[in-house]
Length: 402
Ligand code: ASP
Ligand code: MG
Image 1 (cartoon, rainbow, N blue to C red):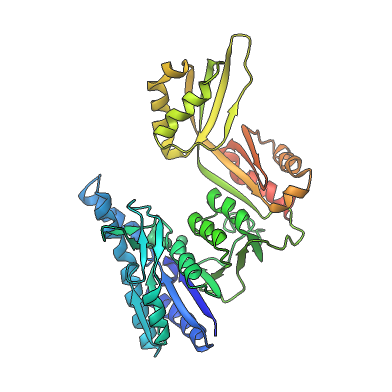
Image 2: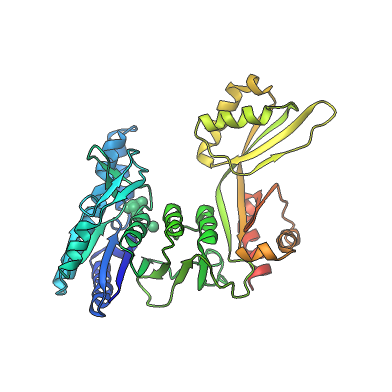
């Protein structure tokens, strides 16, 4: 008998029909002779709706009360799914995050799991029950409710799979797996059979939106193999694991991220410590910088510095820099909010040459100008004009995958 953790996202439990659909998947897994722990998200758009409700009351809700509010979404799902399982004759019990033993640190709305005490879950399994656990939530040291950040139910599922030494961790969602590009935009995108944790981490942070980033980090840390699979269509999904079969594929995916602003400082003094002063200022404001480009100095003793930040941080970053410009010697600060980042990801590029030039050729053939380039062992990203991003993804995808 195997122990299987199955996680179902919000769209998979959005209404009565979908809840019974999930209940039948769980029942079949159970009837095949497995122990089953289920983790669910809030139904459909519930979390967004709750956030909107809070906004009707205040523009600055207390973080503690926000978590108190958001955690209710998952609690609805566990009760309804458990009722549906019982209706089908399956012995089941629902548990909140804290009943299931999730202890977190103090940081409301993005809490990290500190400890997972699986005693209660194990005792319910021993009583032959399916255990339905609320994702996304835990309890901090003061016994206050915390949530794990958007998409945090994935993390709850992986943590349970790791702590229970589950034989499988299945992440059921409304897509059939991980694709080489967004299948809604690129009709030729193909579903991957396998992908490595590292590739998945790059794709998740690039906005592939199939798995929450922290959940993949956790899966990598504890080596929990994940199966991303559709709750609607019973077809094989994508396996995420430490080492994936490259299947002759150099590139696993092409991703686009529109959440990018480029900040430039022109004619900043070419002196030691300038970069330190600029970026420590941004670090103090908790602004994450991604790609950095610095020109070499010119005869006038200045140089140009450009870097990318998330769109939402662009104004904050620019005004912080303007306010403190005297600290790093000044320069002309400008913000470009109409750029996008297009990236290719693949562990295969480590052992192959010419990958970058193939990507750049695809862009050149479309007459697309590259503003910035950044590379890592398994990723190449370019910053281009936002309006050309879809065309760029299609061209690059064609060059590598079809
Ligand atoms: N309901 C939460 C959210 O929407 C957690 C999750 O779905 O994983 O972010
Ligand atoms: Mg999700």
